[in-house]
Length: 293
Image 1 (cartoon, helix red, strand yellow):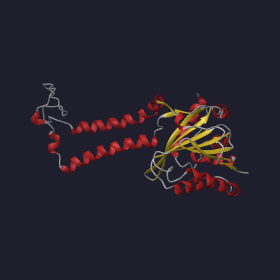
Image 2 (cartoon, rainbow, N blue to C red):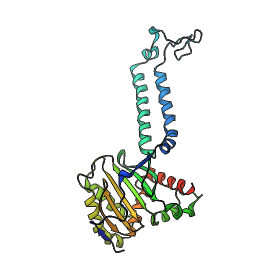
Image 3 (cartoon, rainbow, N blue to C red):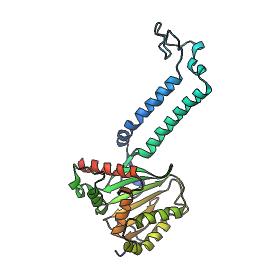
């Protein structure tokens, strides 16, 4: 596996993050089912805290069963709250706060997010790379239009956990693009070491020895003090299953010819030991939807 690094020449295909176009309908379809039940729970909790006119002649929710009053008496407002101890009030408010944070966490970490497209490619999934409770960067993956025919043998089959599918997907010659967006500022060396370690565990030792120097140089050029900051967009492109390139905020940083490296980077996000299981599952589900459409 003779690896050649081409810092000054553009990749075969240059993908600009500015070409991203959103498909709101897909986002709504994938997020509504998750969010609505949780929102309803919060509404019920707030309704409970706002109960009024609770006495023997009312329904217990502020409306009189006998008189069907539409406006509660001022003197009776918030009777339940006035009877609650401070500990009970704090407990109820804490439950509401925790429920709200759970909704936000579910939306950020588990939802596929707004879908998009790149010229000649199809968006297949997204997720969050996290270290413990800290979200490091978001992930979006796109595949070339040839992917549908290249993976047609898996039409109608279960793809999640399918080793044959993962192998075919990773070594496929169709275009693969992975877009990252930093959600927090990280030291450049941490990013460089992280990707070096991820690749070294996915290729034979002899192969990594050949590509390690070029890979380290490319990663060092791509992840600097200014490009490892929150909001920066990094794009990994795998073209033809042989050319791996990196661009930062739309600017090409260089490329390496190495089929093994292309396969390894695909495995980082799609393989059984993917760095984000939510992103992997989202991508696999998206590919399944694409080939079965």
